[in-house]
Length: 569
Image (cartoon, rainbow, N blue to C red):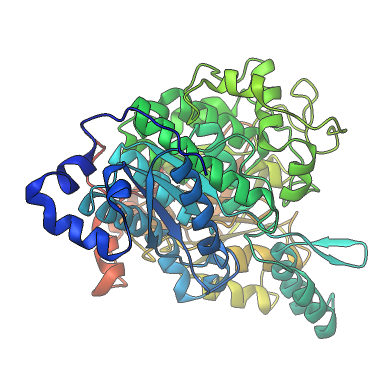
């Protein structure tokens, strides 16, 4: 292998840690893991890998490390791998384990920071898979402000049952269908066996694939790297190229915060809206902005959502999966169309050292029909973005609604409040939820759960029971990217922080208006004020351990549910 000879900055962290007579003890430990004099002399790159055998999303990522290290070596950088943790969302879904999902995002950022800083790495390549590994790694990149490249582990191939294409979404909705007597136990079992046939993340545009796509728009990942499936040989190629790209960033001194600017966050939000991605993307973009020290709020996101068209037909809102998008040109195709129509800020910097516009001009697109997956922005699926921000008496600090996943723009119904997810699920199972109801699940926010779990088990049960167009849901918790229907999440302030959602009573009328961006508790103002005065705080659900620590630190969902005390300096 030919190693590129480069002139490295003298200010690299590894220089003060591993060079010079008085660092002999540090070098001794590097020698003990097999590094030569030449390798110690080079810049030291970190390969952060989120790996776990507890689920398919990150099962294979350890095998990608060597490809990244080979790319680093070709660029004259010595690579060493360190792990970070994984909480698998699907396996924890609908259980107390889901409370650890969002918590793990900030833990991942913290573990990456600790390892990179403690060992004086000069830059990092992060490999992520499942939902929270990706924003956690990207948060760490901008917090550390080192040369950084993100690379995705890839999604699973879609499942097939006859002519039907399957994802994990189908399993959840089939449980609801079984509970309502629409399918048999054997039919449910067949769907289970065929839904997720390979390693990799969920195949649809759920949270993992949303964040992978966003990494390209942010400029932190190489164009085209997010869409090849986990089983594709192109995964190895993108890992190698990402390792090589890190060498260029170290040489030129381009750091994560040079890339993740307001313009980059703007572009990422444009892509999120155009693709109709997961509502979790909102939460994570706010958190990344916080770590980068960039003022980027729900108001900015709302403004973008109102003018960017929804153009990509991806599940759960559309028909196609990540492999289908990859076949027609991937995320770069979407970005190219948006740039041509003036929706993107093309001058934003990327990990190539070139602008987004320049990188797109150089990208090779396949010459195949694509209009079935990616529409022209002039002829969109919907004229506005796939996610709408709502405000009103029920959510003074904001809430989110994935309008791409519902054809309903206005819903008014009778409140059915529950103080936990299990109670709501049991009510659906007992057929107690009827058309015209608004299921309200509260005390499941960042502080209240604690951990802001996803409500996929409940939303899928509603859809599976045939109530997806006639029942709405409102919660201070989160939704899976696989959720569809009139489902409003991230209600802020949350119930545990004294938000109005805490005082919703059985039979209250609730209005959700996606067109106007409103969510209202339709009770008399004086009555609402009385309820708020009489509201008494509930004792915390977690008093010891990680969840108690998280609840004490976490900020509102309207600010990304971050736990770090302030933005980067």
